[in-house]
Length: 146
Image 1 (cartoon, one colour):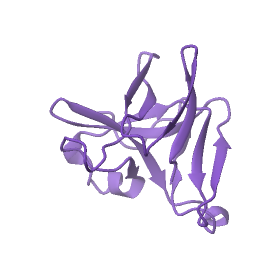
Image 2 (tube, rainbow, N blue to C red):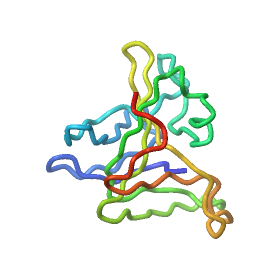
Image 3 (cartoon, one colour):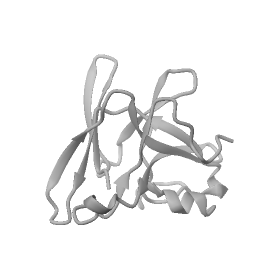
Image 4 (cartoon, rainbow, N blue to C red):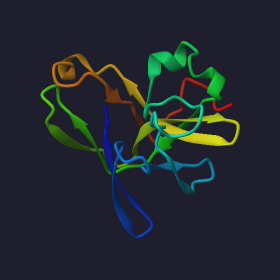
């Protein structure tokens, strides 16, 4: 389900895990800049946004995120970590021009980014229950920015 990411930010190489309540994800902004944003919300953190780090694509399409004014974004990482059904960690590299699909949700002044997850392809379903949605450079999202 993408529990960790590996990315560069400026001269820093960062490895971030969702379990860390201070976890930040890089977000590619429309002007081409990169902004670090809080990765989801934990149950013990203040705020009204969903207490998770992920947004299921089918839940987005069904409108369950609409009240949080969802905005699709690209998350530029080098690789991400997922656990298989036996709990073993595996790192998966993204290719040049690939991004993890993200969703910025907001409630008043609170803004957080969530990783969009999908059902895995049939051949991967035996290993993973959920998988981050990977998009290509220039690919438009089916849900709107505003």
